[in-house]
Image (tube, rainbow, N blue to C red; front, side, top):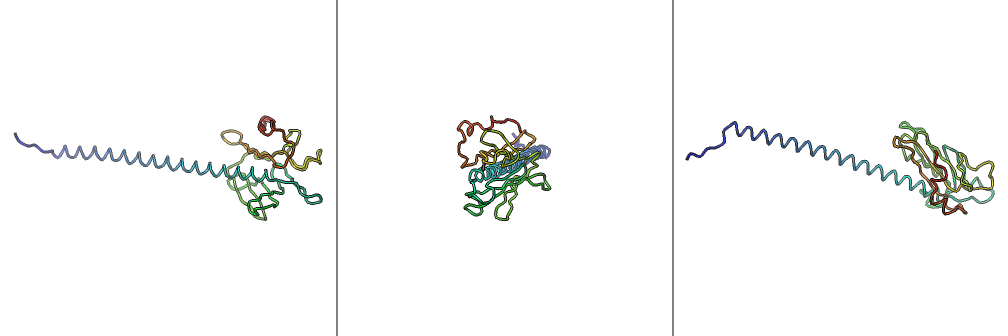
Length: 196
């Protein structure tokens, strides 16, 4: 019996099949690495957004009333607010801080201000973004202090809302020393006013 080896044609077909399999594997690897990069970018953006929201909540929760005769403890409108914060980020102690909505090249963004320095935060196109302030009766207002209620120095809560492609996005923050906020109100604030 004669030993028979591969013919040139069989060797070339084998090499072409191996090259096709290698090409498919490389394309799959490139696709998987691209998906991994997109997932990691999305996770990073989600973490940054969560940190920004936490920063917003923490500063609002640390808002305090000024001493009598000083500047207004808390003032704000639909596009900006300023208040005394007992735990300001940069100062590490009490300082006047502010949150503003400003127009930037990529659309409206949220800016934190303290000690003359500004930190741009949420930089997506915040369509229709506005601040709102909750009074002790559970009503939302576009300005603070409310002219009809001069005795209320601090709002009970602050809301920042804007529209996205997925719907309305809301950041809620309770004002820390706002005494008399009923627990039901604190736990289910979104039921006070579902409109934005």
